[in-house]
Image 1: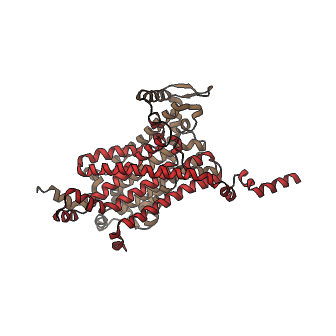
Image 2: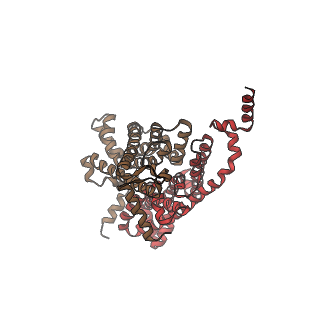
Image 3: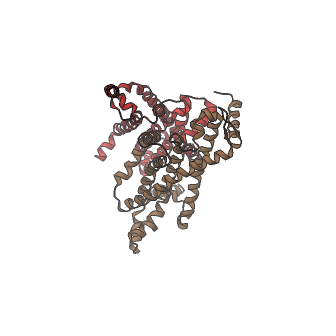
Length: 256
Length: 233
């Protein structure tokens, strides 16, 4: 354990690494500062975004379809178990050893990591929609596609976004080890301590944490934007739970 | 030409040709398997200790939130933020305070398990039906008896589901513990990142470990809840 002043000092040094350029530990090269770090952040976000966008584009519709038709429950649910069991580093290393380095391979690894939460949560979200609501929609003469788009999707949004946030956090976190595959993300200062030193490692770790928390916040914001007005009025997070617990809630409200 | 042929023959006999060409080499794996034993044990140690400590903390927090409802929001918020911070970042953010090594790795991994475990324990407790609780109260159980004899046993499926998720997640994250100087199978992967045999063995062991723990906890679940075996069969 260090004294409080000492570790405070290290954070000050790390902050200095972020805001101003300096000579590398081994000498000769200028490192750190907003210029380089913005570059790295851009790459970090870019590779993550490509992977996430691809995963959403393919597996969100698939999850909606499977959930709507109530098919493939075993696949949709067990894929998340498998996804958790495969460590991101092992997956990346496997790709590196067998397919080589580069942007496309890193993006593919991140894409694979993003799939399980998106697919599973979309499926589960749609399955949790009150069957009565679907029946009512059918009674109004809606087609299958209309039911998915106007009933099941909006009601499943909280669960879908929870999965999307999980994927985003996992992808942004894993993009940190992308420099092992020669993609220059914010992991560069972390994986090259001989050049960047402890200040660079700590500084980059701070930015990675901020970028990830920022991504999470951004998605919460987007969720609020895309949630239809009618659902925004209720505390939609609790809709399924409220239904299940309704007897208790009614009883609680009665003065004894 | 003959020298070249001789070289090829020697390589084939010792299995080195395969290694030099970066193939998947069963012979090399058999010869070098003992290198993976220590990191494997280290990995188990990191996982078990982290999930154990994480469970103790999450369980205490859940009991607090169960009794004092207003703490539910703040506890959920804080554990959720901890869960969102990437583990690699956490391994470095902690180093100025806790130094490099096992301890730092475990602190970060524990922080990561809290949200999963806490959320699942709370879900389990919330799902206990009110009628059951009423019946227990009617039989004269005190709050404490109600908690330990009725609510917690009935919440076991969700609690153990949380332990399963936390354990497999921790095994995955522990592969990054080498960034904090914590060792584990990740250190082996990183040492020879481009060597196929190494990557397959070290990565495969991590996946295998996750699968074994998953089955183990499932087994515990069956043993711990004899009343459920009848109901679901």
